Length: 262
Figure 1 (cartoon, rainbow, N blue to C red):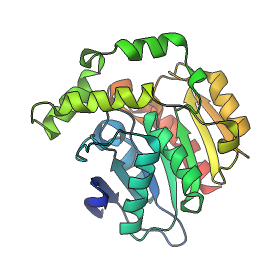
Figure 2 (figure 1 turned 90 degrees about the vertical axis):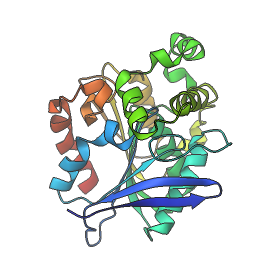
Figure 3 (figure 1 turned 180 degrees about the vertical axis):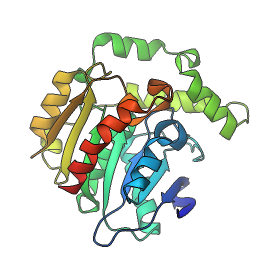
């Protein structure tokens, strides 16, 4: 199976990307955006082979400070990462993609769909939220007090393998923490401008409340809703949530494929 990788520049930022599989005539590739603290491997190592088995072409990226994408002096924001991803797609001469963004990567997916609507055909917003009231006060209080010890060990181990230099892991953690704490949310008017065919995807024991997932699906024009049994990302094979058990992912995948193929 074809695999290429590289970096695309957007100002001082050089975003790492991978391309898996062959293009399909008349069909856009599927862009995968990992969640906070994650690399492509920790978030999508189980999902990518399953997508390739269905003959999809996959583009996966790593946001600023994560995996193989080095941090710059700027803060990490959804809008900044959306610009980085546009640079990747421009470099690859890709005019349109389907997008699956998980957790904080879902913020980037939403920002991409709002800022560059012609580039996004389908959007899967997975375990993410669009307003601060999607999670309770205890979430924000916990994020204020969070330390590196609160990060799952699988994320820490993965980052240390890729980036053994001192301070990298701490920098990534703080980028993610500040990203969430400073997230302002989007007003409904912005979400109503999304033109991509959208699936709001969440789990019944997720960080995000099911009520918020329902509300997002009603605000984004024509959006579909899917709430699966599970936790934050196990249904995608995300390593910290699934522990490497891909049964929930295999159950969810046919529904995602059907949505993309509608």
